[in-house]
Amino acid sequence: MELSKDTILFLGTGGARFTVAKQLLATGGAWMNLGGTQILLDPGPGSLVYAIKHNCEPPKLSAIILSHKHLDHSVDINVMIEAMTDGGWKPRGSLFAPADAFDNGAVIFPYLKGYPQKVELLEEGKQYSVGDVKFTTPVRHIHQVETYGFVFQTAGHKFSWITDTKYFDSLAGHYKAEFVIINVLSLEKRIPVDHLSLPEAELIIKEIKPKMVVLTHFGLTMWPVKPWEIEEKVSDETGVRVIAARDGMVLDLDMVNKT
Ligand SMILES: [Zn+2]
Image (cartoon, rainbow, N blue to C red; front, side, top):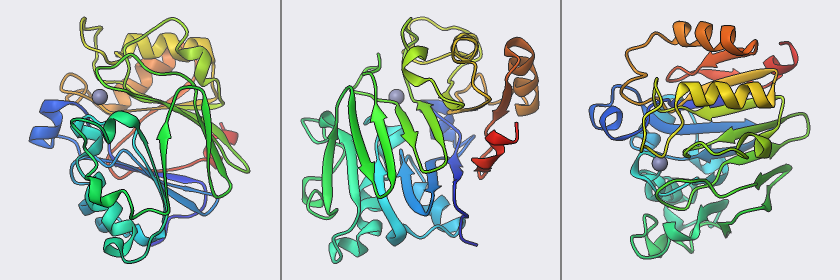
């Protein structure tokens, strides 16, 4: 089954070391079909396997985007670059990643840099395009390595994805959209982890007031909590429709307009 237009398939909803190591939740990132343009975001451990299981076709990818080089986001990036380009025989697609994914301690092998048709470095405040899809990286996040979130604009939809970051005051202001995806690692605020907790996600939702929110990238404290309980708690708290992503969930962006 091919993904229909304007959908996001969550190849994984887990994050951080223990969830990853035990594969309590899958960690393959997200496969997006935005008006026919297919983009893979953050191919973590198992991305290729989960993608194939879900009948995704890597040679149909127009781009692979890496928010940052932590392992739970990047382990499969090399194999996905090969899969996108038929092992390098057919230069194809674009690769977007922060500079430190290529530098000292690179997670992207140098020999693969020539495989995509285009390689672009992500930087703060820039705009990029893939086919008819445009996206921006409005602000550098507070995280141990160079990290960006995204505001995507397609023909019919605008949505943002707040990837890994420590909470900061101006964060929400950069990601205003009707639909927002937030990486939420922990149930409670845990200092000094450079990740968002559920109470901090609630602050962001209250400030942005989107029509719909999806929470994902769950760590060890989120994993035992039933997703519908998280949805109910955050929806009650914020008055916004909230979905806690499940592994393999396909989200239709048109749902936002029906909310
Ligand atoms: Zn991270």
